[in-house]
Image (tube, rainbow, N blue to C red; front, side, top):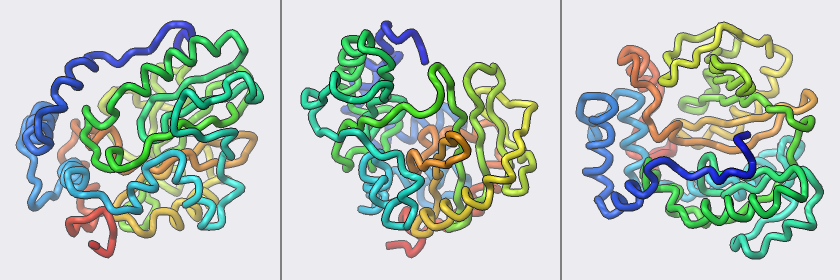
Length: 297
């Protein structure tokens, strides 16, 4: 985590707040062109990036709205029989003023439910005043203005307090299972951020998959996670069935897997900028019918 007593403010957030008055369609088309140097094909998308943009510009299904939210997705995971893989919240509030900062067992994390990278970590009592200010800043942001993800607009914002798992000062790896047409296919591992090159994409044989990360932080390391792949696959397969595409995100603590969230638009659809070939291959695996649901409704 960054310096915990320095407020983390979004770069150029003022610009995005100003641009929120620009309608979604021109905003997204210009945003897409700026990153891919080609025009978005919204009507007949074939690239993975085009499909994600077309999907996020469509009205989200009620199920997607439910599952994009870090608070309400927990119940969805429980309903599918995976209660043991849910990080049970210490508290959930719709108003940050109602959080009982002093009463939660340390350490803990407070997350904005319908946002990305808007978490504050409280390790000691001394962190609380900083955490309140940081969360106050996050609470004033419109988290849909940059990527224009409609599901976040429909999700009712809440503030989720969770125990901070793992050893003190330990950064945990993320496991992000990309699911296409009801099938878990690739796993992105984000190693602890103590490493400069900390990203790798593998398949369910634990073999590296060619994937050009935009950040260039491709790792030469491939952890052997074969003992955990059957569980990771079975959970992801159950959860992803209704959706044409979704990413199921996990943390692993003491060999126990926890579902942390479900992501429908990785980096807002701006991830595969370095290979049109892979972009087309990934897009061919998504049965786009004008809806985020596989049945097209």
